[in-house]
Image: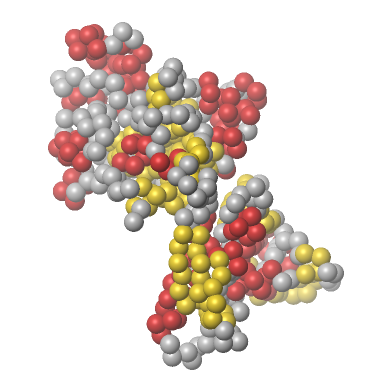
Length: 443
């Protein structure tokens, strides 16, 4: 055991995030350095020492998952933990976190009928009356153990600076590896100033006042999902919109502006009425050959896509001229890079931008790419996954919805799609095979 004194961070050149090299003061007095795959929370280390009959301990409902094909030693050696909670797989960066989450789900389900043998950490709960070889657990009186950091410590240690540094970095070192940190050259995400963050002229349709914006698995399985293909040219395999949309935190099907005299009536119109109003406008007649389809997509977007709705976008073109740098990783010490896709990304709408409003004008001034495009929503992009990891039936479903530009997907919960997929199974697969990510400005 030892105490972390400091660390350095390096690009791992893999999808699992940066590597950390820690400087450690060991309990025997020696000071040395080691990579992050040798650093564990003390609690996880102690739990990992539990053995039975010389064999590795089998935990209830929890297993360790590693990636043996990765060049990242953390992914190959340490990995992460998957807990089976109510029949669903959930990922955790620490063993202790996975065990406690599983135990909590068992207790919630079984209540006072929970037995010690049902739990991984029964010692964290006070035990009631003995019952032969097993005892009931009193779920009303939990007595959790303190969460230990990944360094040993001395309560009487006078070196306050070292303690602060160790506690700040040691607990989060492995946790951060579960969130993919995508490096970008600058922060282009658009944020509204305080004077524009409030309700939009008390207009209930455009206001986010009553919206409940949740980025959770449960919300993803229930709320509207829109698949977006803006600025995609499938014939020449180019996707101009993917990178700018993610980096700026926006989404739009684009097309032509809603006529200015129609915009004030959007809130009171039905989707069909809005579509017909746009089709009657001269600008739409001149602008599109397939204007009926285009107007229908814009009307659907404006009426159905609300704060709390989810957006899914894809990038599938290895030789795309507009492929963002963060979809490529260096394959060796040179500048050579390899496309890591095809990928899909999941975001949640946080704001609908009212056409011809002050906030739309402000957003346009802040946009680095596509200045002036209409029908904007602000989006928090939060999860990314590899298309190849999806089930065959999910991939086939996604391939079929590559057109039109925007479509409300997985919205018929009674329908059984081709190859046996359902709205629920598609949503679950998209969520389970994606991981959290964040954009980080490269320094």
